[in-house]
Length: 83
Image (cartoon, rainbow, N blue to C red):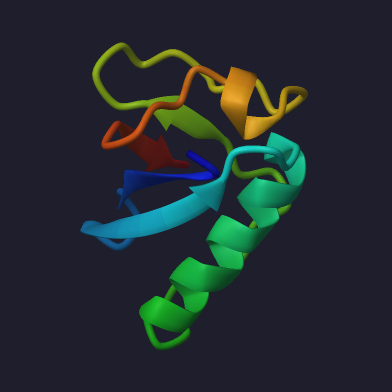
């Protein structure tokens, strides 16, 4: 598997988005791409925030942005929050 699919909840928009992530990219770059995708999917309603963080939705744990996606703890079908 080269990609995983995750569900991202954005509290500021009260919306969920399904996003495909390549597993070999660093999370810090993936987060920027996620924000860009959400901005486009929300017709510009979402404002990109350089200080945004990803949290595991079920546990509330912060997703480590220093790892690549494969080692970040994210799995296919998981739910995260973008805050």
